[in-house]
Image 1 (cartoon, rainbow, N blue to C red):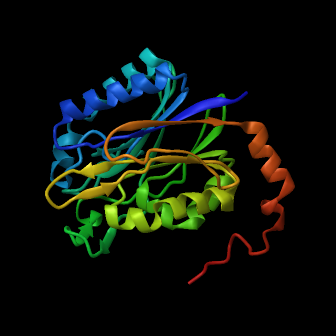
Image 2 (image 1 turned 60 degrees about the vertical axis):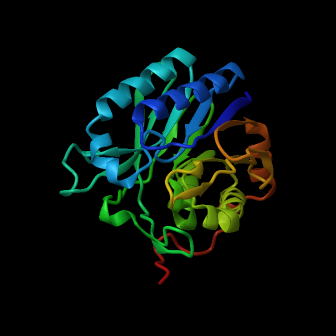
Length: 280
């Protein structure tokens, strides 16, 4: 059965209430169009790095809101990333840090999965902010996560993860058919690499890839690229939000098309390097 899926593009600022109102409007729009899965972007609740601890303390309220949205709209919701003070095993995160957690809710509003961002964005680039050091605020996750749904197995990732192909290969190996990439790509890196990376991960792993991004200015020094899009298993861009700011990107996930691509080019059978080989 074909399923309509949605990438939600936002321009989150530092006001939790306003951001949730913005997200609610976009989720309602996706549901009204017939979507059964909606992916929110990274940092959808609050954008500023300096507010991560404050936001994490409001996690129970945000979780209640997400459950209500999923139930109200009969949507599977992949909740971008939210700061969490606890690890999946219940232990507290290292002092003065949080984890970037992607939470998944089913149509009944039940929390059915969590992925903690593995690769942290510690880089220097030639934009107005110049230096990014997520590891100063965030603790990295360790677990690869694939969620089973009635329409597809969904592999979870967040933003900078997309530069590490082995993660996506592992998601495919664990049965992923759709891979989600909630993100807040910078305007500079997004223009250069965002679509290239989304298409590459889709082609390499023969999965539908949903890239849900932040877009526009979030402060005087932070601008994100947006261009949320959905790419099929052949690497075709099915739909894209080209305008700056908020929007909903819709496309159909067609299981028969994904199976056709995989049957015609069975790349998993053709792999030669052992899973145990570590590339330096």
